[in-house]
Length: 152
Image 1 (cartoon, rainbow, N blue to C red):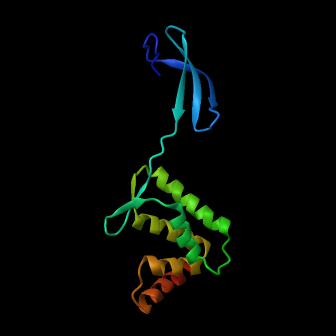
Image 2 (cartoon, helix red, strand yellow):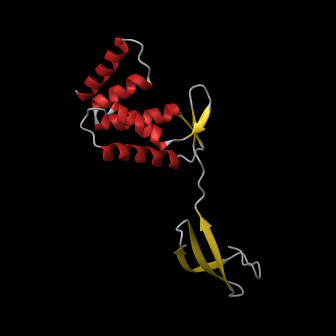
Image 3 (tube, rainbow, N blue to C red):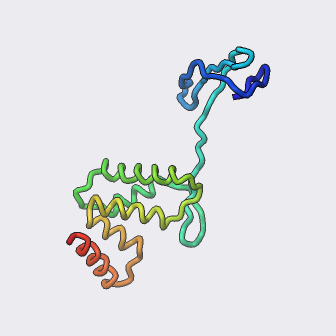
C-alpha cells in the first residue's frame, strides 16, 4: 500500500479489525520509509453473477429459483431442507470459484444433477426429466438404464 505522505510503495499492517457494520476491514498501517501511520479500509467486491439461458438471454442469478427447482425435484422424498440448502450452497461456491461473471444454465444444471444423483436417485431422475426435456418414455428409460448400469 502506497504511503499517502511520502508515496513509498511499501507499508506494514499494524492492526486489522472489522468495521462496526461488518462490511469492511479497517487496517492501521505504517510506512516502511517514513514510519508515518495511516488507515485503509478494504471491502469485498460483490460482482453479481449472470445466468446465460438457452436462448442467450441473461438474467441475474437467483438462489431462490435454484432452490425451488431442487425442492420440486425432491418433493415427497426423504431429503431434508438442510440437505437441499447444502446443495445450493455447494453449487454457489463452485460458481463463485469459477470466477466467471456469466454462467450458462447448462453448467448449473449439470452441477445440480451431479449433486442430486449422489443424494437421491429419484430426485435426480425427476430433475433430469425436466432439465433434459425428455420427449418420450424411451429417453426416460435410457436414463434409468444408465443409473442401473452404474449401480452394478
